[in-house]
Length: 141
Image 1 (spheres, rainbow, N blue to C red):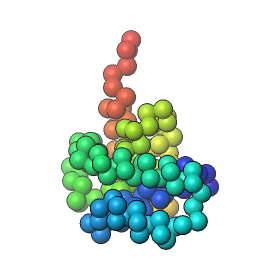
Image 2: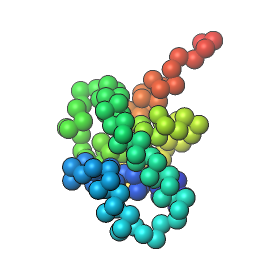
Image 3: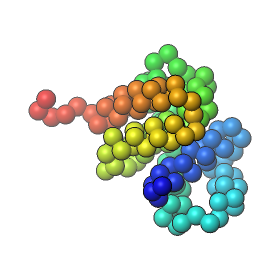
Image 4: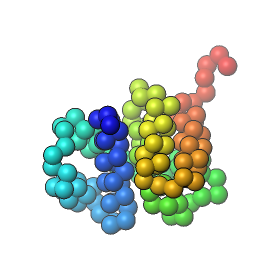
């Protein structure tokens, strides 16, 4: 498994911990990294950066997800799915150089590992729609 994939899985786990435990980013970071202390620095750094983007811009991230998850409120989504979406949307927002298709594919692979088979289509549809909005209109089309 690549470093970025591992980082993205860590981000999902940290967002899940923050979401379910109602913990602050500092609390999550303290307990999470104490349990995952043998992580390569590169994986930890990307995970930290992405986690903090998702947490610090959570209102913006959640609003974007809800706007594109037709008829679904965040609190009605499965916790894993909600946090897979949060991590991917935060990455699209903060790391525009990473191709949208890569971010979506990584999110889908993580959803296949941690969520239900039905969730993959839902996550794919929401992320594709969010990605199109974030890219904005194309000049010359």
